[in-house]
Every structure is written in structure tokens, then in C-alpha cells.
Image 1: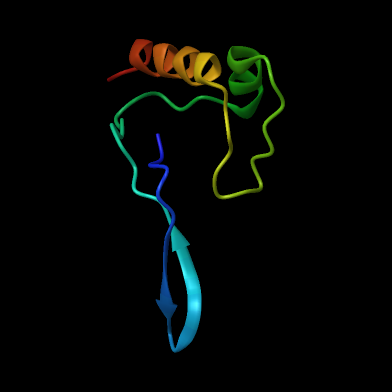
Image 2 (image 1 turned 30 degrees about the vertical axis):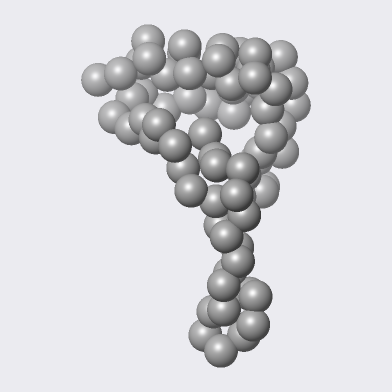
Length: 72
């Protein structure tokens, strides 16, 4: 989950070129989820070509439940 605060800073001499958000409750060490499965779980069609996708709270909770099932 990404923090609401957008962090903007200079990058390699370019003003306001670097954008990020802090990650909260980051989970790692689980079996990967395919794009198709992610779409099934969230009942949506997220665009994975972006760095970050936006999900409704219920979609995020469904995805987190699946991730917890896949923990190694």
C-alpha cells in the first residue's frame, strides 16, 4: 500500500523530476500472482504498464488475502 503523500525531489540536476510514495505494510516472499489472476481477484482490469495502479479498498483487501495464502 502506498502512502498518500507524494514525494517530489530533484534527480540528476533536473528539478522536480523524481516522484515517489512510501510503501506501507510491504509484503514479500509469496508465490507470484499472474496478471490474469490479479484481474480475477480484483474483478477489474488494472493497467500493468504503469508503475503503480489504483485499487478500491475492497479490491486491495482481496489481493492481500490472496497474497497471504501464497506466503512461502
